Image (cartoon, rainbow, N blue to C red):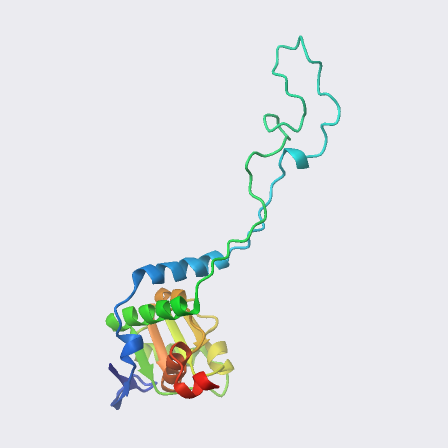
Length: 216
């Protein structure tokens, strides 16, 4: 597929950029896409919640009360889950929620996410831009000229650009990443994917390396 290249002033250029159909025009695999999003969300969980079970609660060494004549049940310890201050039954304990996927499945999920966005006309290619100093106003002007103000925008640059990153970091709906970094969740979460021209090849090669890169 081919997409026009816009300037930072929002004008459509005469040239178009050729995107790989094997990445941007595949039939999205919803099952793999779901699993990859679930993996991303699960791996963010800390799994540090902890409660004390009966054997971990302090106390209960002596007999709480006499065996007979009280009219109560024969609870042998104050650590019983039936009593206040006792242990917890089936409470949470530290664990890992991490989910693993093969590299092939993760790549397919990213392709599916990009193809979905391409099908929704939610991918915009712009010429490369950077700033001499961090200025949020400059990012606002670019988004305004492209008529995507107020939308959740994912800006992809070819390499780390601190000026662009610092200019957009206090904008709650704008996220800046290197083109080889976004996962399927971040792609789906954005309303618009704004890719700098030089970042397109970086993005494509991160998913489908060329023969030279694969050999290296």
